[in-house]
Length: 134
Length: 377
Image (tube, rainbow over the protein chains, first blue to last red):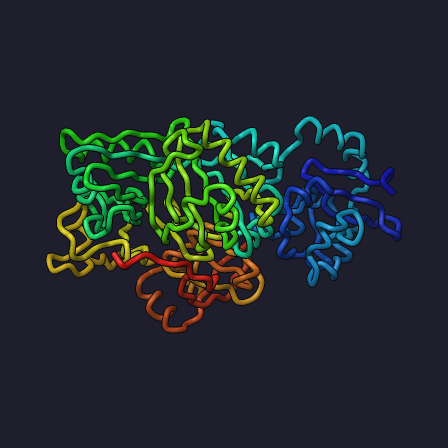
């Protein structure tokens, strides 16, 4: 699972879903620790088409709102309904039950451009971005 | 700029952010958890960024009284008083706490962002022979807050337990440096604030932390919790609810203005000769609101009528489980405010969505744990 997972510089992860060509997206463990105190998640509408880097969802925490960007271009095919009633899933299980949305990739090669686990770990070690605003 | 408690915060896992040029922890664990501890048990805050001035000289009290909106002459010695410094147009230069220590000494605690300007402005307005000393560089400010604060101090500084609400003292902690101590705070809970030199201040903070953790489940708290706790009480924050273009009455802080005291800077701009407030109808007025449904308003979000007409702007907003929804403070068009207060629905624009809001008077939350209060001033 972790071998096929890819990461963005804005701390989303993307991993293949059960249906070929579809991908799940969530936020990384680093991101959930920074965000903390999630109050709710504004999920995208199924069927919406997004460009790479387009704003797909908004996580509202006590401190601030955090935008979740599409790791690659594509169309939303599902959202995680459990986040509506239990947004804390994002904090408790960011790579599993805390997934945010599933999309059908428009240009799957865009996903190959993302960081693998080793590259993301190095990115964090080098101080890669800090989603917490002052 | 780092402050004396910086390394202690790093050790405690503080997430540091820049706040008006100072490196301060925004949170340690989570903002909601820190708020809950302060409401139910105890929390400790680093407030070393705040400015601390000492004004000394013959009739320093009368001189400071002529610079603030509230009536320092009516407060007994040993009491703290909230008030505003005004410009000639009646706008707020800063909101401050004044600590009465007899006619020859008044201490002031001012906002970090205004410290240097305040010091210059006050010095300019003080008569010859009265001196302002800025004790802030190198000092430590600590706020111990929460219903468990009493039990923490039983073991650390029992001599302050007989203080009443807003009582203030100068005392030597550990027999060393002199500290300004007040039974005051910015959370709505019982608590104490301390200002004094860094050496003793850091070891005193460490003592509060270790005793408090063992005895009262105390946690160190950051600016995030401080902001949410004050917002639950509807306390203003300079730069958001207060500024040089609006008066204390615009901010709904009528209590901070004495209508019976003598002359003070800005008086004629905000009070009629008889003492009634002088309101500029073109100025907006501060009001509280709660969001109906999902959504967290933030500073700068627009307020609209149900017809989509712009009528104001959020100054501070947030979400707390004690309020149960998004809520905030906003400067509102006076005409809209009248109908809003009477029950009309309004809207706040959050991420492009228009969410219904209703008027709510502050405090948004009341702890219901009154602490002994002193004799009425």
